[in-house]
Image 1 (tube, rainbow, N blue to C red):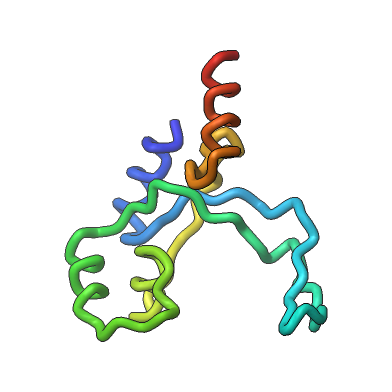
Image 2: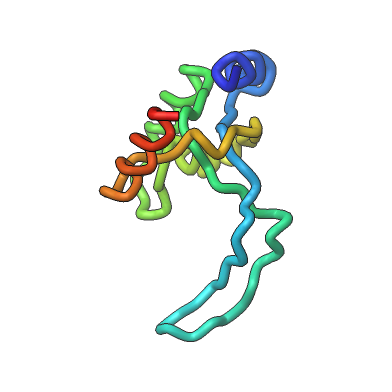
Length: 110
């Protein structure tokens, strides 16, 4: 169902990403010192897949590289384009660490 919602959204919006609202309190810090607490209601944890109009994505990747590029969405955002959120689901986890793999195995076994 997430793939269908992303596909439907990209047809009208051109750029959309799966994401879930952040439930944790997030702190901004520098040098181990808290500098602030952003408003959690404005924060979303981005997931995959990210879906884009192919012409828009190609145009975005012709920009000069910057360290601010962390995913396809950030590259499109750098063009000044709007990237739309499609609510994902918490089971759509990123597999990066050994813990993530254990969690995936647990989810698949239930």
